[in-house]
Image 1 (cartoon, helix red, strand yellow):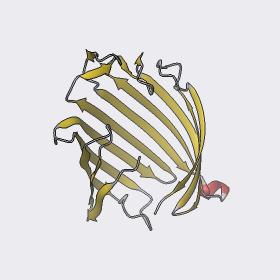
Image 2 (image 1 turned 120 degrees about the vertical axis):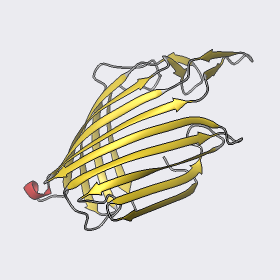
Image 3 (image 1 turned 180 degrees about the vertical axis):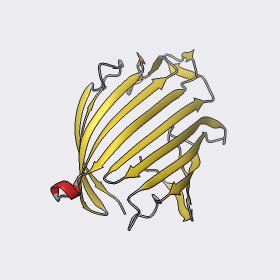
Image 4 (image 1 turned 90 degrees about the vertical axis):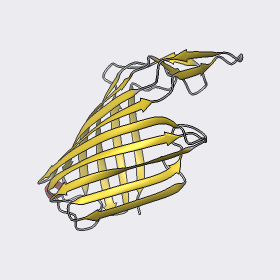
Amino acid sequence: MNSDGIRSYGSWNMFNYSAFWTDAMYADNGTTLGGRLGVSLGQNIYRTHKNAAEGIEFGVSHLSDLDKNRNVRRSVYAADLSFSYGFLKLQNELMWLNAHNNFLHDNGDGTFVELDKPNELGYHTTLLANLENFIHYPITAFARYGRWQPHNKQADDFDGRLVEVNNISALSLGLNYKFNDYFKLKFEYTDSLGTSTQERYFDKKLGIAQMVVAF
């Protein structure tokens, strides 16, 4: 997701940081501010060139979503941990979203239904394998297991309907082809492992192809 705003990145010895202040991420009005502080042992994820191939990275993050009156609507707390050794890299992240207000569903007739706070817990573990030394092409394969656990059991669908939501698990497999430091082609297949929600466009099985440009 891209938003208008300002961002800052930097590093010093084994420490690195990012900070941002952008348009609201969870609503049409307000702003979002936050950042991440990381500690690298043997690598620095903010150096895009000549980065050490092996090491450990640990980081903690925080995000505050504010309404137009600067009141906090949501707070997000996260921690991530990654290990790199040889051609393998293991990435892990845990995130907790804390909603400060109860969820209000608009019935469309001027009345509202007040439900629990839409708190959420999510995490993933991703294993990446750089295959270039074996097949002589800049290809990385990955496998990811993720889990989303909403506290509330109902939510608005894209068309405003109230639908049931459940805990979701997902297993993803994919390949990345790296043309250069700025352009990659990604293929990914995701299976929800039998879990689902009542959202209209929820896909239990999904294949995607992406072109990613970074600069």
